[in-house]
Image (cartoon, rainbow, N blue to C red; front, top):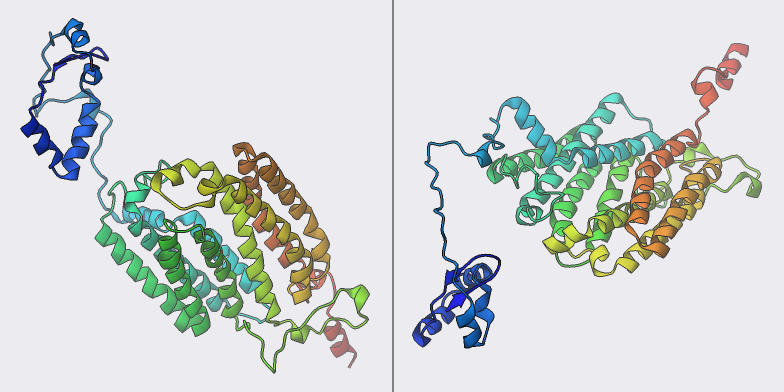
Length: 420
């Protein structure tokens, strides 16, 4: 049988029934290879008319295929280079890539914001230990995540250059790094900070490297679990100085009403309020959806190629709707829940309206338009939104007099002491 097409010609002999039966009984991998290579055969193999087959001329190969000696240089190998040696400097670079430095820095910053907003005083060693322990926990979680997703990262353009995919570091080496950081992080938090912060750090490793990674290929609920993971670091900062997470009979939940609803000034001794960490969790939890849903929409083709169960792949319209809902939810979180918990003064409720209005408008356009341009706008707004909101929270922290802190206002207690 003669096949033609694409300027290539091959003689494909007609298979006997015995040979055909043997081909059908071959393993699946062999059949897959035969189906793949059949696309490079002459297109005439699909022509059923035998008379038409006889009229198609055969074009024999008239040139020889060059054989390149093994010791000869080839132009296609000019761009290749040997793998870098694992020098200490290069090894630190690989460890940083395994730790996803931009994510880890964001996680450490949110934990430090929890320390800064906590009403309980802390020390420099506690602050540094919290930052180092949180960074090590983040490094362990991200490395364990990449170890499980090597074959899937290799299928996506945005992740195929990760160290484990390109074999810049072995899986055994990366596992050792993940175990070392996963043990050292909680150990530092346990010994230098307190057990509660250490348990939160270990829980975050388990949630991210365990449940979240497992759900990514099974359910869209992975985004909700990932949002919980992102909301835990501020709790670690809150508990680092001894802040409470749950109410009790001795320390019940307190509500700090706005000045126009009460005549008594806020009792600063009650600022260590269990409602405050809840407000922190809700802020970080809801922020994750405009941030991640917009990003996942932009790279949805890569997620679909790797088989991840993302809402942006299965239902883009609902993905945008969820992002808009949580962008709207951030408004009452910032303007009601946060000052009501005593984290900030009620002035923050007004100043936070401006960044929230910008992000709600962008999320609305993303939901109504559903385009990639609108998704990129939501993602870019989410990048500056979180540091701006946290900065405003620290500016409007309850009980802080910035004029006195900068030395522009005398301390009333000092005046009293001088008079006496």
